[in-house]
Length: 384
Image 1: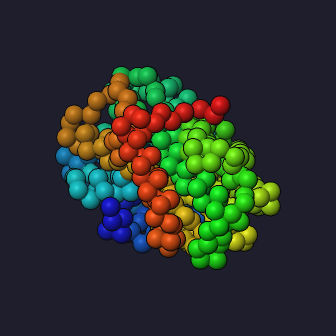
Image 2: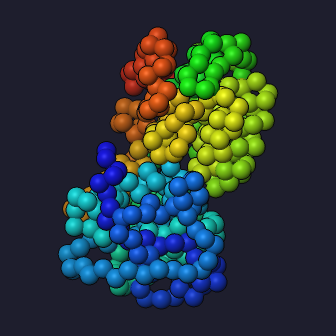
Image 3: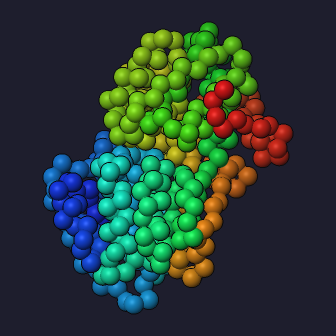
C-alpha cells in the first residue's frame, strides 16, 4: 500500500514518568501532539524522535458524535523505527483515510508506562475511545490487568493473546516468513555473491541472527530463520545474539560487528530500532543484512545492504480491528493468527539488491513458500 498518501493523524509524544502520574487520573484522553502530516513521528535516523523533554503538544480536532475514536499505544522503541511501530501506524493511517475515524498515538518510553497509557484511554470521556490498540507482546501483562477493570472498553493487541471478553488478539506465524529469509541467507552465503559494495565469501560457515528482548515471540523468528538456513545448507551455522532492547541501534551495531568479524556475511535481525545498527555494521564491513516487519530497503537508508525483509503485516491487524470497530462488529474474546497462507508474513526482496539475487536462488525460496502453504514443510516455532 502507498504510505505516502496517509497524512491525517493526531500524535502523542512519550512523556516522563512524573507527567504520567499526573495524567493518569484525568477524565480526558492523553493530550494529542499536533501534526499536519509532515512528520513521521520519529527521527529519520531511526530514533524515536523524542528530544527527551516532558513537553506534550496539543491539537484540538472537532469531531462529530458518529466519528470512531481509537487510541494507539505503540511498543517501546517508538515511531520512526522503519519496521514494527511504523507498520502499525500504516494500518491506522489507512483506516483513517478510508473511514470516519479519528485517532491518537502514544509512545511509551518503557514497559512500566503501558498500563498508564492503556488506562488513560479507557478512562477518557473526551473523547470516548471506541477501541484501544496495544502494539507489541510486552503490553500483554499490563492489558491482562487493564481489560478486566474496563469491561465496556474494547481493546486489541498485536503479538500476544490476552484472554478477556473485550480483547481481540492478533498473532503472526513469524517462523514461516523467517524460514524463507533463512533459506535465502543459507543459499547465498554458500556461494560467492556480490551486489553493490557488499559480498559473500563463498566459503562462509555461518550467518547471524540479532534479536531484541529475548522471549518466546522473538524465538519464533530465530527458529524459522535457523530452519531455513539449515534447509539450504546443513553445514552453515547460525550465530545468535539478543541485545535485550528494541531501541538501541548501538547495541545492534556492536552485536553485528562481532558476528561479521567471526565470519558471518549475512545477518537477519528481529530487534526493532536496534536493527538499524545491524544495517550500519553491514555497510561498514561490506556485508549483507536482512530486515524485518516492513520492507526496510524502503523505510531506512540502507537499501545498499538489505537483501530482503521478512514483512509482517501488523498494519493488516490494526486496520482490521479499526474496520470492525467502525462497522460495529468488533469481536472481543477472539484470537487470529496470520501466516504465509493468510498473507500475514512474507519475504520481500530489497529494492536495490533484490534483482541481483540469482534466479535459481529466488526460485528455491518460492518453492519453499508454496510448500509451507501447502503443508509440505512444517516450520518449527521454537529453537531446538
